[in-house]
Image (spheres, helix red, strand yellow):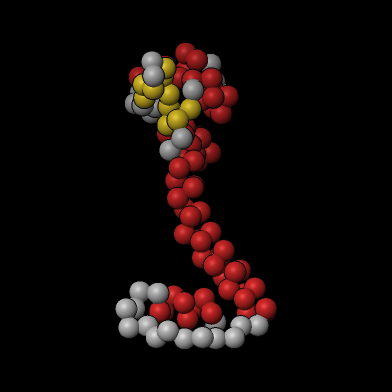
Length: 107
């Protein structure tokens, strides 16, 4: 078992023994690598979801979809885009824009 696995097994156990260990630099390095990998695996989906839910301006929507501002209004009327008011300005969800792009790619 590696150090990361040992720490994972004992971190939630109130009966975990207190021990002193000697660790080689290679094992310590591997612990750091394993910790970084596990943290990345845990956080990456959160960051991807945050990017997916980002709010875009009308100009950003136009640029991503390659359309004019009147087409954004038409997509809103069709229910494909939901306007979100933020401090008096209108924004649109990145996830809805991505869905439009995906539907175009599937046609």
